Length: 378
Image 1 (cartoon, rainbow, N blue to C red):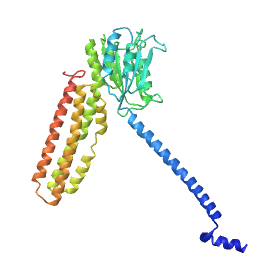
Image 2 (cartoon, rainbow, N blue to C red):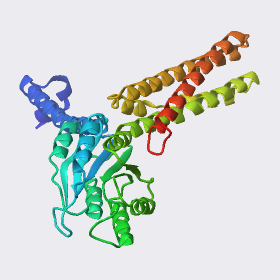
Image 3 (cartoon, rainbow, N blue to C red):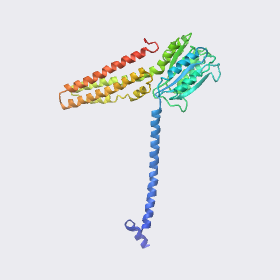
Image 4 (cartoon, rainbow, N blue to C red):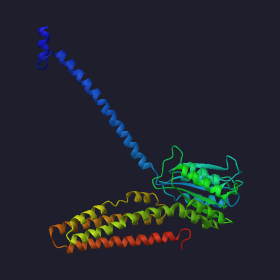
């Protein structure tokens, strides 16, 4: 017993090799077991981070449903316009195709021909060419089911815009003469989906325009555009599909960057009066102006020369803004040192003027593109 206590009391100084090895082995097992939860948590964290990053990368800026009228009329011009235009849409947009037209109360009087997805422009064009003529314009059910498509379980949400572009040759629903009921049904379905959905209506060779105008008023969306010829239909559909998103992203760039020049001008005035606290605050706000998301969206919309020009101007504006901020920082350093500000102020002024000139050119280009749209001056 005494030998056991002696051995135990001197364990740290000299256990036998076999006992030493056993304790070492046990310790290693415990360390490995303790490390496993950390490794598992790390792996789970990496996987979750990867999924979140992939979701951010995959999430489309726009989700667009093309809803086309397959009831009696010039269906060929509608499908021709769509197949021409869809190829110029944004490469990162998620798009789908649905048609309406058939018998009142029939389950197949509206059909989703292509589900939401990116890179499916050819599939949409092919499906459009195969649309079969329907009997009656089941407009209400087409819109209601198109709204439901946005709420499908595996459909990614749009980062910026959900929209339905409706091309119809009939100004009202053929199955329900109660326009107020139709409007309520559509509004209720949009509200139930919990989404903000923009509608763009194009009336093609519509004999009576008032009902479609009333529907857009009740839905709180912009007035319908009307086209009388196949060429006019194609231009109008192209404007909504390709030009309007370019305008939106480009205008966002201008709206974010332009106020930074005002902040930088405020910073230079504060420097002149020795208020470096105000200057630092204005400079910090100017640095927060970030337009990377908008420019990434423009990168995916370069199927037309006009879109390329707008994207290049947006990139140029971002670069010039960085130059203005750099010049303002240099001016602030010189002002703090008490040196003469003539030279750094001239550099800043030149950078600011270059930015303003490019901003004016961008504004002029966006004004021109708006003129090409429905109701514009062309």
